[in-house]
Length: 235
Image (cartoon, rainbow, N blue to C red; front, side, top):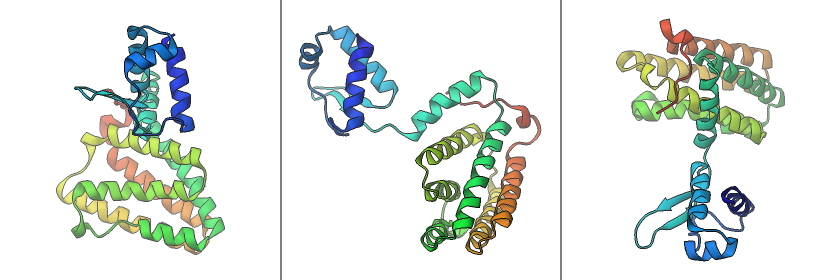
């Protein structure tokens, strides 16, 4: 019964019948509406909360508030399965590179002026204008923009999921100090070069250059024992 209640509410959230941010009715009303007991209703709530579809709020005015699922939710479940299967970080990096190569080839073949303008706008600012954390996020946003501009929502979600997995798994491996600044500058130049090749319509050149850049980034991140390390995402 808890699964049935969760299924009905889930469909209402996805269809927009109950908008994001809405507080669900009191438990007593929902128990009467679905004809279930309080423990059953609360079990349904736990299912929906684990899917990031509701957030339980405590207190006098507490209850269940409808929330929007995030890419991090998808990454968490995917990461759990990848870790269970013994997948390595290199495997995830390679999957990301394969997806991005096809996306870049598509953008270079189309040479759409609006797309090129959007890519140029997504290029990270100068190192002196941002913190290390902001710099890292800016670099990731450029790659995410590539997927978004391809116009395929499924590829976009998968790409963002892979980036989230990599960022989480390599958090402790990130360079600091001078090494971080050098890595930042190399990536900034590489991104700008990719945009120029796309602008020129050089699909092969853009793909080759991007793959070379991603391979170099992978080698810098996955050194020594990390090359065979299984994805580590469990908190």
